[in-house]
Image 1 (cartoon, rainbow, N blue to C red):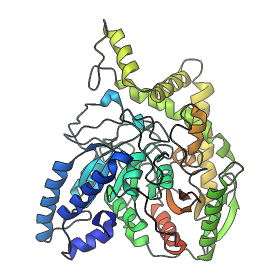
Image 2: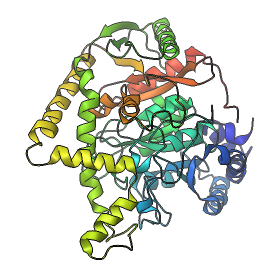
Image 3: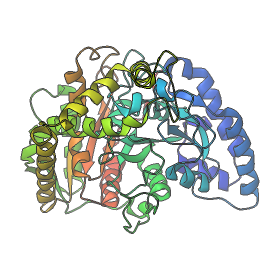
Image 4: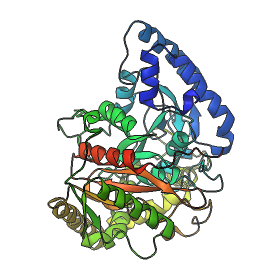
Length: 485
């Protein structure tokens, strides 16, 4: 196998044994990028020169016996994280030339662990989308079928991992933006508990929903990255000082005697039959591991999409008010006075989907409508969280499809926002409740498109998720395929 095809743990073993170098791994990744990036378009910004320099420094440290959790490993970053001296666009024209003066906490922690940053990956503009089609910098394509979307909003990160254009990647998840593209691209994607990973330096979409997590090629790599990025950060007000376990210690444990809940609201009419069949096969694997699968109910699930598309746009319109052409980012040169400059800057700087959500959020928060929309949505959100709390009172984890369909064709849903929003119907509730969720590959359709199964657990139970998902991964024996690039 080529070096770019290997996992973090396989490469760390080779680095420690002196069988390869970080420079060789990094060059292998860039050779792969040169070969396929023209088709996939996973990246907005590549950092070739700095990456190769950092790889040489990593090799010096390795020769001295100084090897950390990620020393010498090429990692990609969603272009939503502030990176000191490297432009950070959030997939938007309004930040096309923005260069942050500091690193996000997650970037700092990866850097301290020895990671090599390959580049900044493409994404839906300001993370608002389910297909990576709203990016100002163009569409990312699914490595399994270049006519199809990779999912969103972290589609570039998922596609880069699936196409071996990096060894692993970091994304953000506001309503499924890690788990949904992970499922559609056939990789592992974890959304941690809200507050588990610091959001300092993450460009905000919806501050009560955003969370940061890894994309990896297998469960062991997922645990390695979580060990690095999880933990309390005093600079971030929603970061929780909860003890972080060694997530690798949960790998290889069984789930014999566990109770796994299957929410009846998720396996419903309308789900793609091949996706449903793959998920039901996954359920049988879990039962074969000694777990008892039982039907449970999350009765407020039917309100999740409506609640999300009130709360998320309301928070977005507040967060995006800062982009006014004055402090940083794009400024229209056509304004004759201050007010006209504001209007023309925001009209030209934001794409259609971002403007749509700003308008929805402004309406939901406006005088006379706040109680009817935002306040009521927040109350129903509390009921959604209560549903999960009650389910976890009787179950160790829940198990659901990650997405209702395989990857759809580029352009198929861009003219119908409601159909696009329904792409996240199985992932949104997790963000509303603040609980962790993980998507793991569970097979392929007849057309060769990946499907994913989702495991959910209670607050700060990422270890339990990793235990269950790794047991499933080991015994499911999903065929190892690579995209036909």
